[in-house]
Image (tube, rainbow, N blue to C red; front, side, top):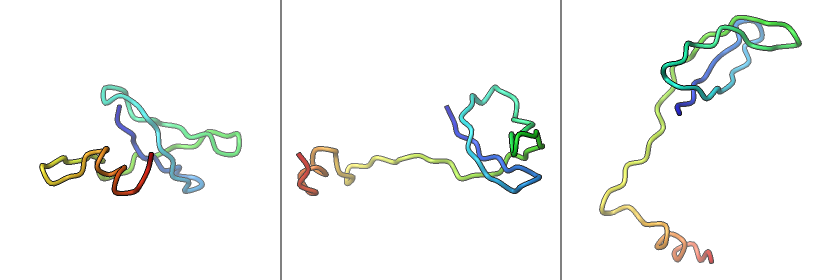
Length: 67
């Protein structure tokens, strides 16, 4: 499931929320025991590209000398 960044419009606190893409955006933040409006922020997607030159976990563990 994707992680979305939201910003409270009252206190400017930024937080992450994991939700399905089909779910509606959050509308409220719980700040100081009160409910304030939030805005979903644009964030860069997180993904890993594996290529033939990228290290496997086993090779990386040997390189870092991890048992």
